[in-house]
Every structure is written in structure tokens, then in C-alpha cells.
Length: 419
Image (cartoon, rainbow, N blue to C red; front, side):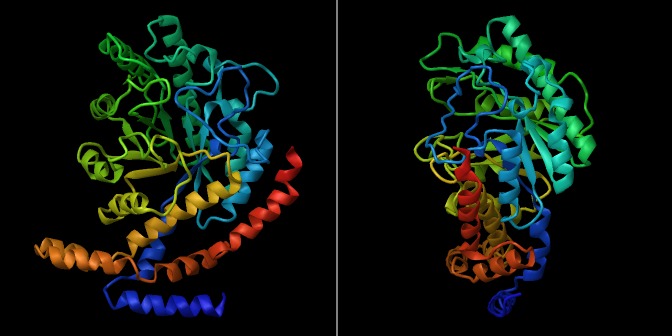
């Protein structure tokens, strides 16, 4: 280990100890919090099936940086590079249209675990957990903007079967890897302009979800989550699966609620929602993203929103009750760098939360709000960077900005040759 990093860490540890923070404890907890990287950052939400459906559903990947993954093997190679630059052991979040179909046209109501066998083998080799999502967009049967809430029963049945099979695939992941899979259902259903009937689509959606979840699957293998949204491009006036709809559904059906940082009004913070919903359900799923003016899925940065999310998890001891996944897709920059930046920032935010001085909570409990504010502000300049550098070096990943040189080398020797 570099003597400078060790020296800086020793001084930081001493500084934290002086205010009652156990740095070693924080460094033991951080590796136990896995982050689920999202496969769709690597290929701009393209998938590998080719049914001719447009992306749709309010989803937009902007930019055209060279080196996009074109095959499953390329995507896995890019992910391996990202994981090599991120400290700790983590997970991968797969969408259903990333299956491998051997040139055969397999529609989504016919997907099986065998179509993800290579992903399972790869995850085993890399000691990763897998999470899963049915893909209810980019398909001719989603072209009118409605899937599980479609007025056409035949179309609803198609998507119900797709989601049923997705749960089975999630369970297969859990069984094969010995790591519980979280299978999250999000549908883009909604309307561009004001609907005359909001109730009927929601009744259809509830009925469809009931049919999907009818089969009992061991929670040791698969956990089900449902994901609300405020609006999307093409569904500005009405989203069938609103926050209130899915909150009620998740609590009443004992499912995980997925809180996506981009799926609320810009003035709302999902950090405030975490302790609220965890009063009534054992676990939740987070999709950590960064919206700029709308649900624009920018790369996660170390801003106040991210720090608040991490603090809410750590300060309340929710580390085992919150599944953390990333959800953004930026095609304007190097895609491996996008994964690396976002994941390292999520981990940095968690570390900062783990290093929070206990006097802040004590001051609040004593009604001393002056001290609370003063200590909150002083904590912002504590030497967490020295602890983060030590953690990275102890996990054999690049310290500071040095990971960027490896991404640039990979871009020159691998990604640039894909065009």
C-alpha cells in the first residue's frame, strides 16, 4: 500500500476517532452493501432480440459515443472492466430482452431460463448476484402505450405471460447463484393527454398483476417488486401505475416497492420516502438515477440528493432492507466510465453516511437544533476522501482518478475497434 495513502488514512482515522466515529466499523459494513449495476447502460437500452419496436415508454438514450456493446459477450467484457474499477462485490440487473436466443426468434411470452444460461455462468464465474426485469417496451405489442393495462385482453395476456416467465427466470437465477434475485416490474402504460377514464386501466393493471403473482415463489429465490412513475414522454398527463397505485398494491400484496429517484416531481426527494414506506413493508428496491428537469436518467453524481439517500439508509440501519440498483443510460460519454462513476459515487455516499458523527443525532434527541445544524455543516469537510482512498486500495482497485486511465486504454484498444 502507498505510504501516502496509509499516512493520510491514519490521520483521518485519528480525526474521526476524536469525534466518536469508528472508521474500522464503517469499512467492515461498506463491503456488505452490494450495488446492482444496470446492464442497459452498456448498449443504450438496446437488448439482443430485435423485434423492431421503438424504445418508447418515455425512455430516451441520448448521444452516440463510440464503442457501444453489440453482443452479449461485448457487454459482459465491458461490465467486467467496470467491476474491476469498483471496490467490493456487487450485482448485475438484467432486462428480459438481453437474453441469448441463438438466432431464433423467441417472443417475450416464450422466454425461459435457458436463454440466460450464459449470464448465469458468467455471474457464477465473477461471484455476482443477478436481478431481473420483464421488458414491457420496445415491442409491437407495446406500441400503443399500454401493456398490462391494455383494453385488449389478448395483449394483456401476452404481457402477463411475459412477466410470469420473468419471475421464473428470476427464481432460476436465485437457485443457480445462491443469491436472491429481485425481479422488478415496470410498465410504461399511460396517456399523452387527459384521459376520460382513469379507473378502467388501473383496474386492468391490478387484475394483471394479481395473475402474474398468483404462482408462489420462494422469497429465498426471488423477490417481486413493482415500480411507479410520475410521467413519461408520451404519458405526460396520465400514468396508470402511479406512486399511489403501486404503494397500495405493494403493501396489500406484500411486494417490494421500487422507488426510482427520477420518477417523482423535481422538488421531491426519495430519501424522505424511504423511512415512510419501510414503516409498512419489510423491504424496498431503489433505482438510483439523476433527473435533470425531468426523468432524464443522468449518471449519478455525488450531490445532495445521493448523500441524502445514502444517509437515510445507513442512519436508520436499513442496509439489509433496501436493495440498491442503478438506473441511468448516458450514450454521450464512455459507457464503462458511466458505470464506474455512478457506482463509485453510490459507494462514496454510503461511506460518508457510515462516517457520520454520532453527536448529530444526539444533539437532535436533546432538542439542540443549533448544534445539529453546526455539526452537520462541519461534517461536510471531514477527511472521508482519505478513508475512501484507503478502501479502494485495500480492494485492489484504482485510487482517485487513476481508474480513468484504464478506461481510456480500454477505449483505445477495445471500444474504438467496434465501429
